[in-house]
Image (cartoon, rainbow over all chains, first blue to last red; front, side):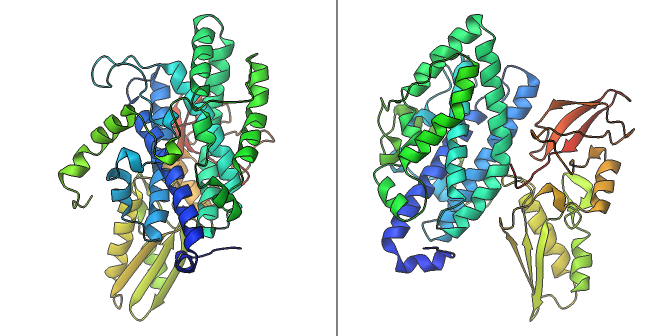
Length: 273
Length: 158
């Protein structure tokens, strides 16, 4: 089956439900990790990294905006409202991506952890790559088309984070030790990134995306040479210690982030930008 | 129709004001019927903040034309914009602006070589794959000792 236009979804309620769920996962993931990325602005290890990270963050926020636009196109609501106006319980992002960058606040005494930033972003970019490659064959044509476009930008993001990852782990000493700890910490919640949530099976049945198992195997295959090259141990199972964000389970970190990022929006939701 | 195309050639990229959206290869389709002009544009990068400005400028220049009563501008993602859509003229204008055009070909491992837009030397170094806008990278010319920017190659094989 191939669905080429949003209008065709009226006839396909079950298909539409699975598609909407998937789009929220894609949108909310990119949205919240881009927000966490924006908090690093001015704090990255050096100025070239500040340029790079903010550029990646801008691309990623663009991807989120485009997924929210796809939701708007199928009548779920206005893209801006979907991005800013939904509560934590309505969000479908993985818990790993909502976690704060570290202790402190970006305006005063930020003690952000660069090792955590590199590991989280590398693992996420690789997971996104696996998903995007699968979405190129998505049965919902508008999503398959944007996947081709996202993929071209993601190419540079993934290369960037992989380079940081290999260089820091192979640097030895404190860098390696901190990276090793960050890897452990990220794996504690990484199953949530690879999860498709309660409606995952339905998404697969509808031909929207490959199954969790297939995506996970591809992710492992992609990072395996990097783990070998850096002499790190790659577990075959990951955890979801704090719950599954795909099903609306979230932490206080997300509630606080939403309060901050939607502050201006909530002052005047009808304002035109 | 020719008038519409000519008018679009006057819409410059707000961040590189020597090059038009036509030369950048952003214009995919122009249609005109019953006083309504419909333009389909391809964004270079999805999150490019210049898109809204470009939309406004297209609406402006087309509605100034005689006989055009309504203008619809749509950004589409298919076909995807790729950097080989930039015209030869566009590549020259980028150089005049001090920006190296994107390499037409990359090596087997994706590596790319860029010539300095000032002295044409290929003795250049990439300083940062990311730059001041989503579409640019930062280079340094070892020959004439100038820093310069280059447009990133964006291609379907990636």
